[in-house]
Amino acid sequence: MSQNASQPIEKENPLGQSILLFAIMIALFLGGIYSLSYLTLENPWPMAVCLGLFALAFWIPQTILGRSNSAGES
Image (cartoon, rainbow, N blue to C red; front, side, top):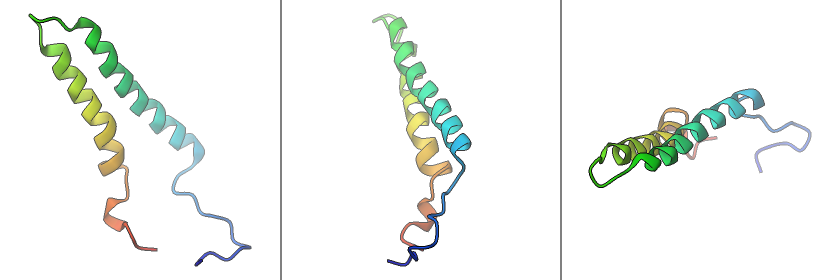
C-alpha cells in the first residue's frame, strides 16, 4: 500500500459537490424515464429525448467529470 496508515485518505471532491452532481445526474435520468410517459406510436420524439437524457446522465460523469485521463496513475 502506498498510503501511510496515519495519513487520511484524500477525497476527489467535497461531499456537497458530490451530492449536487448526483442530484443533477439523477434528475437527467428520471427526466428520461418521465419522457416515456408521452411516447406513442405516432410521436417518436419522447423516445429520442429519453435516449438523449440517458446518454447525458451516463456520459457526463464518465467523461467530463471522470478521471479517465489519469487511470492507473497514483
